[in-house]
Image (tube, rainbow, N blue to C red; front, top):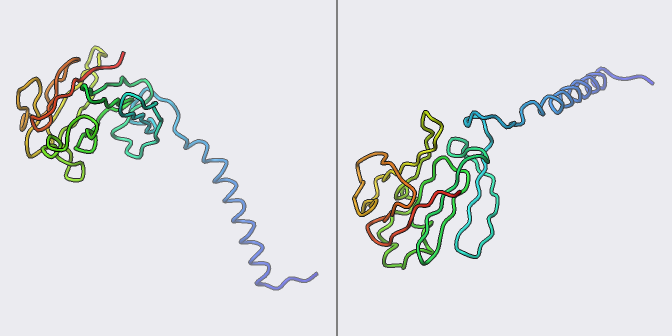
Length: 180
């Protein structure tokens, strides 16, 4: 059986491609994120549930900077109309869409939409002694964010404590509760 020059080149390219593909597959397992206590290297993951009767569902995230590992504390924002459970998030922005089950349409119109940057965000920080601390920051909302009836607009990050009351736009109120 005799091969032409083009056929030999084709076979050579095919073999080299197969070797590269095989090496790529065998090396790719090294690039799979592994558990690490350094939160910057942990794959994104979050669990969000709304309302009283929803099961918590795991959702894979895409923004690694705003997620942490499964060991991160969780928190709940709730009022008599409903609740929003945030699990394993280091930072979370909130907008009108997050509170559809917590306020009426008249109240919600004072809460900035996420598409416009959101209303406020909650950030978890780790203090030097290893204790988790939460902060809240108004992110340039039109109607302000109130923490325990005090407007925190233009104040940057403000310490958030378990049991504090947050009022986006000064309308309805939600209670901040750290999960145990």
